[in-house]
Figure 1 (cartoon, rainbow, N blue to C red):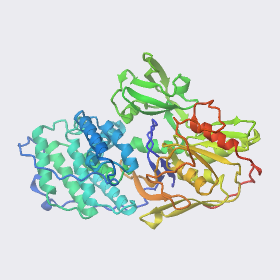
Figure 2: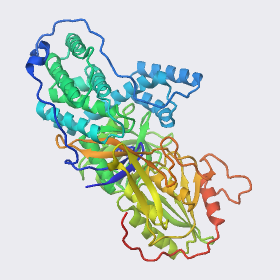
Figure 3: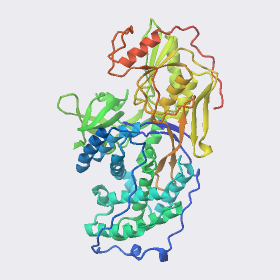
Length: 593
């Protein structure tokens, strides 16, 4: 199976991921495994049984530097202000807020180096909570043997070695895994499940023994990394009672998170959510969410969903789920409370505006997520059609062509395509959508460390729609949205209106793993526009810059009827286009990509 998904950081209940993603089969890479550690080579303390710990001084543990980021280009005042704010948040253990404060700087490549380490630490905390708050993951994890944990760790390292866009630094990855365990043995979410008897003395013993193990050691290869992690797992078991498989997977997950800002370890639930996103359907309530101080903000309520039928609207706040207040929870923790089997019920306390919270009871159902919405003629006299592509799914190209034929029958002579807020989706869908409007030529090119990741995706002549196009983008239009908008821009096929897009330009492969039902999201390549322009941290610049809060440009004959300045500007651009040729395409023919 091969699918290619391109999405940006998401707000949906089924958490989407920032990636263009090929999905690889389990036999795609040969995952080796280091030999069982020779007991005669292990330090004596590794084999010690779990028992009363002897108080020992805690030796300093070597930890990795922060995740690589672009050069610090922030003004000194900005860096100092951000550092002070993050220090205050760290003192309050508000790790999610630290990540949220840093991510805009990471996206723009302006994260001050002075705070990069704190950002990485916050990510470790957030990732730990997200993983171990998932009941299905905990159940799978505790059922794994040490041998299975070691095989899974080896498979992950093999995938990194063979597929990651950059040559792996196994020493750095191992050190980040050690740092994650440093966080884990003090974190109540982790210790409550895996180390309930972890006293201060036992933690000190763990740290002292790990420090002796790694002190002065350089991890030069995958085999070295496997051996060190196996030893640490046994130390964790002997001193703290942590099942070896738990330590192995915790260090594996942390290593993945240290590769780059988009690679990640995927729990069972996260992997299932990703596949549901590819298919465009899931069991749930039909809402897209993001975190808010009092709980969850409803960014979008899907048409025809249980949430819509229950009266929920965009902009509502969910403050409690089944009577449990969710203020301060991460979006992942809260979203998990919303999930459940088809047909099950959930009660929500919902706040709208300044009114008091009201309780709504909903039933979870199978929800189809439409990718083409708001199809309409916005100006019948001028022949201006409009539609919104909310994501790029398997059926998007077919759904779009159906919408185009309806608009064509209604007299469409020009078309506005709204990509605002579209985080992406399947790369193949973006190529197919572009192919509806481009006669021929390159749509997108991918380039990786391995030649196997180098592809050119092109359009073909048959079946091209020729009406003039106006495409609206914003800072949340990402990945597949940028592929489409960039192709339209580079081929001079239409006018781009709005604000600069997200700037997501790397490819992540989705690798389901043989053991544990978990998976990986691994950066394998970068992608480029038809003219060879990169997208990462650059995005697509519009031809006509119009921000959501901007007024209609002076001289533009646009009546501000919608209060939506980018849409009004796009409609005006479409009205000004004179159509000199037929819209209707010839029958499409099959063409190789």
